[in-house]
Length: 116
Length: 110
Figure 1 (cartoon, each protein chain N blue to C red):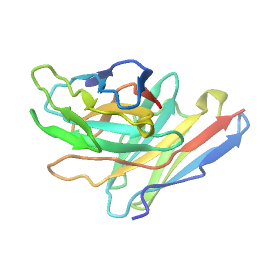
Figure 2 (tube, one colour; figure 1 turned 90 degrees about the vertical axis):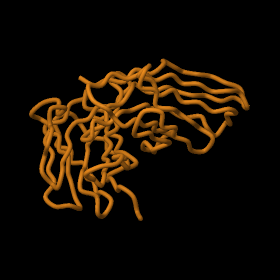
Figure 3 (tube, rainbow over the protein chains, first blue to last red; figure 1 turned 90 degrees about the horizontal axis):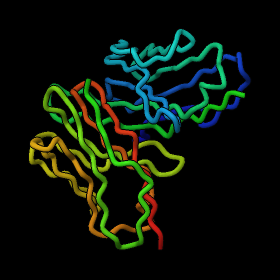
Figure 4 (cartoon, helix red, strand yellow; figure 1 turned 180 degrees about the horizontal axis):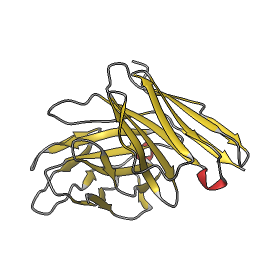
């Protein structure tokens, strides 16, 4: 199993540019999560999907952020326009949601975003 | 809302020392509890978990017991190694999403 795949691993861009982060969840998983990690705020949940449907986007910081999941094997997180305070590591995680039992999430390696 | 509080770090230990990282939680229901570990430059990996009161999760010499009466899930290891140096996150799940603590940096010196 390849695990959760994220691309790019590193992204450096200038303020005002559009940034798109990509995630491929583990095959067979039906929930997908986007997190942001910074020194100041720790690990924050931005949004999560069940069966490709956004369930909770209350963590999305503002309208500049948007996320999509067009199918079960692909999701994007877009920032437009980007700002220096968006600099962080962005993680994607996936899970096979069951009716009962534990609900372990599997994390990707993250995308380190730097906005100059 | 649900929350997780874990001891602040960094925690610095010598190799073979005993490790405890405290974690307490606040939840309205009966959450599952997790410890995740993050090595430098990597994503989080599940270390261990417990799904109900008095369950003990264990993995790679690490243990944690789900204590409902004290709402705690402290992480312990009897003898740490340099390779255990990482950031450790306590988390709870309400069945939908994970709520993480702030993370505790562990540094083990040889």
